[in-house]
Amino acid sequence: MYVAVKGGERAIENAHLLLANARRGDPSVPEVTLDQISEQLGLAVDRVMSEGSLYDRELAALAIKQARGDLIEAIFLVRAFRATLPRFGASEPVDTGAMRVQRRVSSTFKDIPGGQILGPTFDYTHRLLDPSLAKGVVPEAPVTAEASTAPTPRVTDILGRDGLIESSPQAEDGASVGDLTREPLNFPADRDLRLQNLARGDEGFLLAMGYSTQRGYGRNHPFAGEIRFGEVDVEFFAEDVGFAVPLGSIELTECQMVNQFKGSATEAPCFTRGYGLAFGQSERKTMSMALVDRALRARELGEEVRAPAQDEEFVMSHSDNVQATGFVEHLKLPHYVDFQSELGLLRKLRQEFAEANAPDAMKEAAE
Amino acid sequence: MKLSIIIDNLESASSVDLVTQQNNQQAQRKAAMAVLAHAEAGEIAARLRALALPAHQNLREGENGLVMLRGRVGGDGAPFNLGEATVSRAAVRLASGEVGFGYTLGRDSEKARLIALCDALVQSSDFGAAVEREIIAPLREQLMTRRQQAAAKTAATKVDFYTMVRGEG
Image (cartoon, rainbow over all chains, first blue to last red; front, side):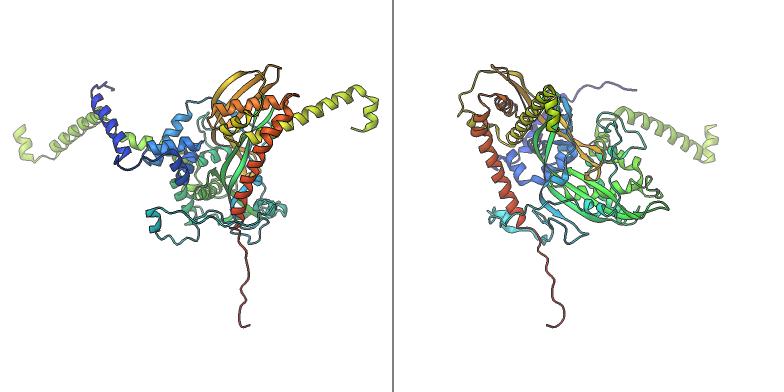
């Protein structure tokens, strides 16, 4: 039974005003600007864009500011904003092979064409807190070197030439691309939908799922074939213009995981693969995504589905942090009526229990 | 198409020329858009002031929306939906009839309008050369410089492997 309850409006209004003040913090401390968030907390912005599933640095920075740095709240805000805009269409698929690479490493081949390029990375730092940052510091200008014009082919493309790795599945003619923002999820889900789900999935959840495969829950022997981060151009076929118009470029991270081989009586053994792709510099996210993508291919590759990371319904139904937080956090909203009915039932059960267990003397007295 | 065939079919030859011409213009427009999409609205506006602009009107006011960005499975396989991006678009018509379109990532509808205006000018025989010279070429140069600088910083982080000599000399 639903009962409309009124009241609390003033308390809510005052609470939101208090929130606005808490967000601002000590007014003697300068207010943070969107540019500062975008430039100096860039990886938080990248995460909000990825999981908010909307590439717009300024909006993501605004969301982070409004959410007081609560990234899941920020992701929620971005998703809600997205629902207010019309969709013009879908872009041409981006070409990550033509990426203007800012970082590119392979843990499988030392001498990859184009080389190992570390770029801006936390890797090999000592993870010691730097007190100079507390005071504010102007870093030395970065060192420059002559840039090579040599192409940086994907490592998987190189392996693919010798047939050592399975090739990527190609689209069937006329096949439409699944979109879980338009149609509800159905299982089993195809790889396009799985990758879309993982791309907007919670980094922490995917990290734990990926980690679980490494610890033996659906082991698939991964190597980081390649991780690359950089800028790719985006084109959109605009009906009114009549050709694919350039929209500018976006930053992406891509991870190609190379996994244990498969083979059969008719097919020579070759490595299998898992794929990760996300907005911005999101290395942990794309590595986890690639591990989980590979694990979710268990059915297709004839592996026994035993571990949580291999169970697509489990993974895909719990990866979205906006859905998850909505359901978990709704528990704090008023459930007075629900609770009253539970309470009534509990009292009745307790009474029955008391009567059943009452000492015989009392029962007799009662009779 | 072989020359002999062209001579035998003069009519289709001229239509081939037309197609080539259209393809050239399309490639030119696309190249200009690729540069403009990477520039700031203020930079485009500042350079447009150098031209005596012909009369024009907004055919479509700037409009913000979304484009679903697609990747490919494994980087080279079937497409999948990665996530959306904000996009602004506009269309402008010159008094002489050329219609230009502006599309850009982000929500800057003024930038979309300026790109549309440039696209219309690129198609105009009176303004095409001037737009390339005054707007597109310098913005392209700026973009290339920016990219080269970024590439040079990246290049300094490339690993040079060397093998340690083991054992005694």
